[in-house]
Amino acid sequence: FAYLIDGVLVSLIAGAVFFALADFDQTDVKDCPDTLPSGVLCIDPQPDDEGAGDDDVITMKDDGIWAAIGVGLAATLLNNVVLQGRTGASIGKFITACRVVTPEGGIPGIGRAFIRWILLIIDGINLILPVGLWVAMFSRGHRRIGDMAAGTYVVKSRYAGQPLPVYVTGARPY
Image (cartoon, rainbow, N blue to C red; front, side, top):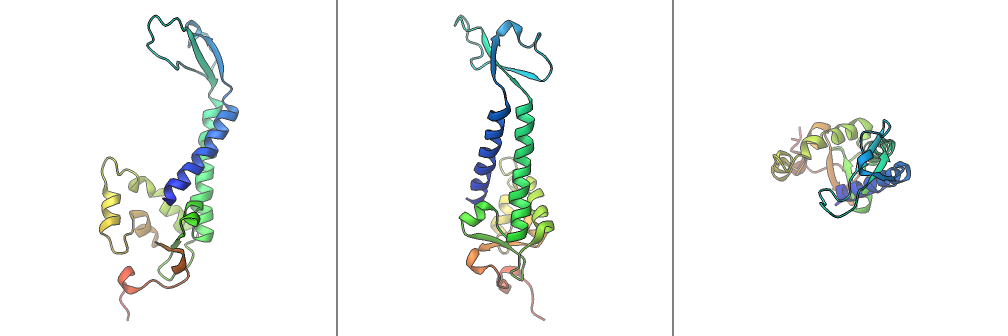
């Protein structure tokens, strides 16, 4: 649920930027796209409506799209790398009472949080090849690939700050 909350939050922020900067307008379908200036996109909200008599399309500047992508990426980095690296939790993890910790129970730091975030690419392709899901289901401590690479664990917030037990980490006492 934490990833869902984070995703909805970033989507709302990026969507607000998009709609604030997209600059929508309406034009006749025969003007699209030939006589439009560079950087303007045509969108036909009702394609293939033969005989409907609607010859209008929506135009918008592509600045809103690029700004939304940039703001969305920045918000994701701030939430999943900076905030999580400095506090152990993204906004979604704060709400769901989860924390990202090192085996000693400490805060992961920005470097480890970045590794976790960038490896979401592998964990996120579960629809095609569910490797990330399988790894998380069957690994010790139910860690995803990003956690294994970063040396982190996701725990309930009440366990943050405490060393993780041997049965979770697999570390052997000397």
